[in-house]
Image (cartoon, rainbow, N blue to C red; front, side, top):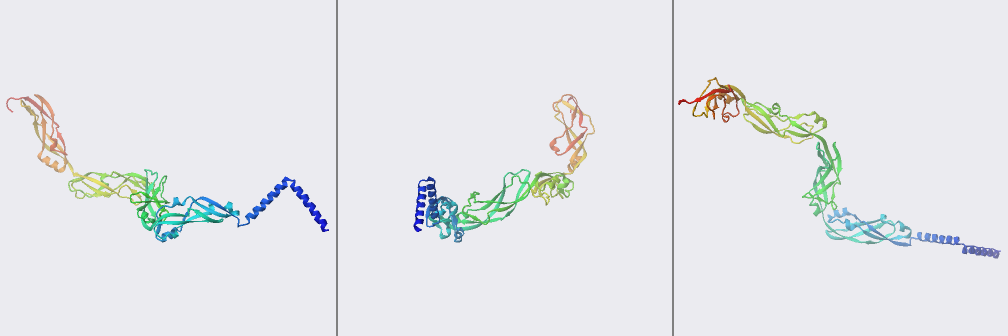
Length: 429
């Protein structure tokens, strides 16, 4: 029985082998099965590994807080030195395809630095697949110096497109100071922090979080690469309101108070500037026509004077271009009018002619400061008739005065002219 079974298996084996040796398809199938079997053996055996190089990696700083706790800080920017790091990995064959730059991390551990100056700091690398067998470069030479901190004020300014009919103002900064930390040589150059707030297309008040720049004592910007601050941004409140130019009233009753000295009066006032620009809610601006000032006291004044005063502002005004103005109050003696006698004189009479005139009742209406008018009403007015270049004949000539004798006065003669006859001299005046 055994012999019969053995003989049967032998014949089956010979038949199968003969079929396989003469069939190409079965040969390829056998080869594929062998490859799959080998792949399975390799992938399931962790002792089978390969090396893989990962290039162009960027290293990251670690334990910088520990460095600062040791009162040290980086004195130069390591960014360039941290780029282009290469790592060689030993990876199990099964993980070879998975090992790439996304799962390799390179760090520069600063916790080992204990003194200022030039230090060689080792690079460290980790991977999720396999192990790191080499890092190129394996360390970086860096400069370190004393760690320092200081508080600096935060300033702000508006930027962007600003409309002429709008008013912009920074009314809130939070925080108002920043603590800047880093290498002492850099920290000591920081004078202030500055925030620039873009107000383009803004028409209403708003609040925004804005980034800041650091400026040195010459106003130049300082790179923040090596520095840290107590806040990464500043909250800024911005007021935005429409503006309007408003004139200041120059009505005497709006500008002065009190009574000038007896016999004097306020004749006019002038104000500089004549108008100011006001920022406020649009509805309030539309309701205003002009502004008033705090009245100037003229009690007992007898001459023109100038004085500084303030504009009366409303509590709802957000801004005014100036609150102070200069007022000039013109004070003159009260004007009066009175009749005065005329003392008539003839001038420039030719020597060969005699002069006669109609002896009318000449008088003059004098208008001007009351005291001068009163004096002239008593003394009379010196008037002249000019006979220059006249020949014999009859003339109607105007009555005039020397204007230098009567400045600031108005003189109206009655009659305004005189009938004059010039005739040949008979040898007697």
